[in-house]
Length: 397
Image 1 (cartoon, rainbow, N blue to C red):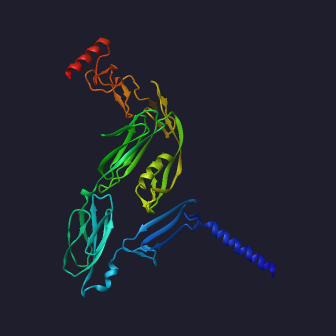
Image 2 (cartoon, rainbow, N blue to C red):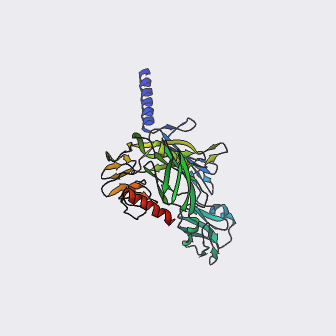
Image 3 (cartoon, rainbow, N blue to C red):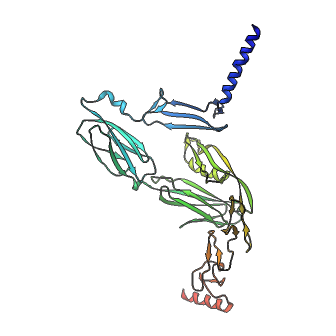
C-alpha cells in the first residue's frame, strides 16, 4: 500500500512538471511569474500581461473609454447601455460608421452624449426617433446629417487640415572628432557630437538623413495636431568597425504604453534602436518623476553591421549585405567623399555625380572636371586662367 502511494505521488508530480514545462512562463515587473497571457480589468483600464519568446515580458494597458467589462475582460464598445433605461417610447437604435479620410491619428465622432473613436473609422450607436434628421460632429471637418431609421448608415469627415505636424530631429555623430553636418532635403544642422533641427510637414512623411561623415538614417513624422515631438538619427563617424545589429525592438513607456517596431527589412544596431524607441516614449510619464522608456530590448539578430570608411582615391570592396559604406557606393565598392573618377566624383551626400564643366556652379574643386572651383563656379585648370577667373568673379560682385 505504501509503495502504491509513493508511485501515485511520483505520477502526480510528473504530470505537474509536464504541464508546467509545456507553458511559457516569464517574470513581470514585480517579480511574479505569469503564464503566456493574463487579461484583467483595473478600473477603466484593460491590462494584458504576456510572454514573448522565453523571457521578454510585455504589459499592454488599454484605457477603456466607456469602461472595462470585468466579466468578459474586454473594453465596452460604447456608452449605449448607460442610457438604455431612459429611452422614449418608439425610439430605435441607429448605427453609423464614421469615416475619417486623410487621417493618421485617432479621431472622434459624436452625437450628443454618444461617441466613438478611431483613426480611419469608428462605429457610433445612439437612440433616436424614426424620421429624425440628426447632425454628427467630429474632431475633423464636416457636420453630415443622418436620417434615423434603424438601418446602417455612413458619415464622412475630412481630416486633412489636422494632418500636419512637426518634431525636433537630433543628429548624433558618434566618435566624431570635428564638426559634422546632418541634412535631409532643405533641413540641415551642424555640430560637434550632435545637432538638432526642427522639421514639419504631413504626418507620415519620411525623411532620409545623411551626414558629412557618411551613412544614412531616417525619421517618420508622427507628431500630429501640432503637438511636436522628438526623433533621433545616428551616424558612426569613427574608423572601420563591426557592431551587432537587430531587426526588431520593444519598449515599455512609463505611462504603460508599449510598442514593437521593426521588420525583416530592418537591421539596426542596438544603440540606433534605443534612440528610435526613446523617441516613442518621449513625454510619456508616470507621475512627475518617471518619464520616457521604462524597459527596452533589441532582438532578432541580423549579424554585424560593418561600417566602412574609405580614404584616398581608391575604392574598397563591399563584402556582404550588412556592409555600410560611409562614403559613396558604386559597383560593390565604397569610395571616399571627394573621390575623383574618369567622368564622375563622390559628393558629400553619398551620391555619384558627373563633373561640372567651366562656367557651371560648384562648391568644391573636386566637383569640377578641371578640379578648379573659383567663386562657386568651375574654372579652367591653368594657374593664370584660374587667377583671371577669380578676378572676373570678384568684379561681378
